[in-house]
Length: 132
Image 1: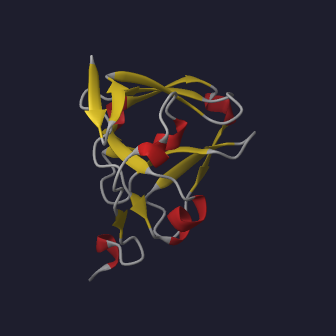
Image 2: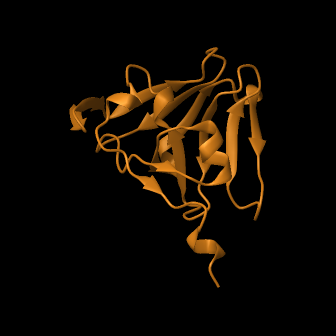
């Protein structure tokens, strides 16, 4: 079954890979790409990825777990994963909702994140978890 998000068709199960193909993920996207967004935090500004979220159970590492490296900073809550071979960010366990993974929409096979209309930018500089 295909869903349309921002004019882009997405299957319920989808494959995502890093650039070199060493890391392969399977994502359950029963509702397509939900809430695609950018963020202006220091990390996201530098990587420039469009991200969307799935529950932790929505991502399975099919190949290359040994190539994934984890990077944490600031509060060390979020866990950002990237391929140690090619450097591509594939997914992260979210800081604002640790029960979800954010994933790099650009890693989805057959999806061009630049074709998704009107992707909003979240204010990650003023993250809600940083407010007293």
